[in-house]
View 1 (cartoon, rainbow, N blue to C red):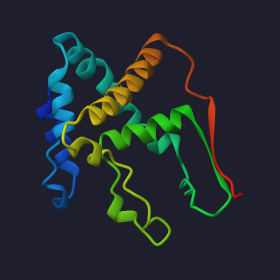
View 2: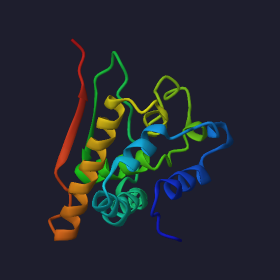
View 3: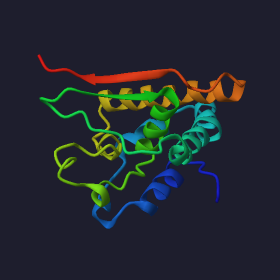
View 4: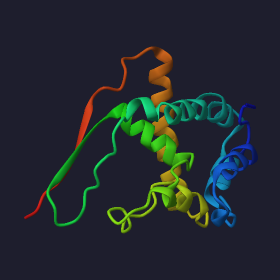
Length: 164
């Protein structure tokens, strides 16, 4: 498809696969953030970082082959993920590709949506803008690592919930 080169392109692409219930999403924070970038920063984001985010999102089916357990309150459990798997999950959350309603079941009914729609749709307050800057910086660093030929993101991260 066509490369995404502006806020409007990105907004329209995300809207193209969201269900009708999300029609009122304004993307205020995302819009404010992207419009605040200098021309050089926009070039880096749309020409370098965003394509990396898209590639990580597309890699999800190859990176995660089984359902990830949920860390519920009052239970001991852990989830072990590689940095690459985490990047794939975050990329899909950034692009709002998780179809939450389709797979929502009794186990996941009390968890918030993983998509970043609520961050993108907030009033563009400084805290939301800084959160978005942090996420974009994370992907810019990952893009630089991939571009430089650095080793794959194999280091694992343990998420653990303990009782007591």
